Length: 227
Image (cartoon, rainbow, N blue to C red; front, top):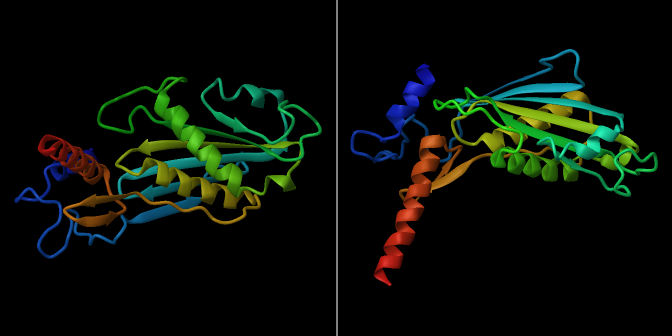
């Protein structure tokens, strides 16, 4: 509750209505190039192949990885259930001739992740878009050719949302894949960023990202009215 109350006070910036002071400090005391404090933990659960907890500022994410494990026919229908599945085989997820692993990804956000309680449905647009983005990133990152006729299932859930949910999810999944011992082409890391008061902000929180968006909208509207 304290975190949510703090967010409300940040929404209006400082006493002068600005997010960046004359000294170059943001409302939370960070400089423009500083990211929020990061906390991580690996191996949260014993009954999965890999898991991690990732916290950046007030944004908190848990990621779980199963696999590589035997390919199941259910993987073919995972897209319809809200997850994103991809494979490079003949199109039949259960095919025993598939030369690469199938990567299934599912992104969810807890109903209590924001101050406004919003239960997520299976066909939620944000859920599908995030699942697809995660799938595209890690399907290219994982060395799927090393795991033929198998599948890797990735699940990530946002426990508390305060901006940068997708970057935090990407970082959490990378840690979970490392915990699972899955071969990667490289480590994938991400961060949110914004542009406000002619300054680039690294690791922007929800309030900063909102004001960056509003600033862009006002800039476009001003330009449109002057032309």
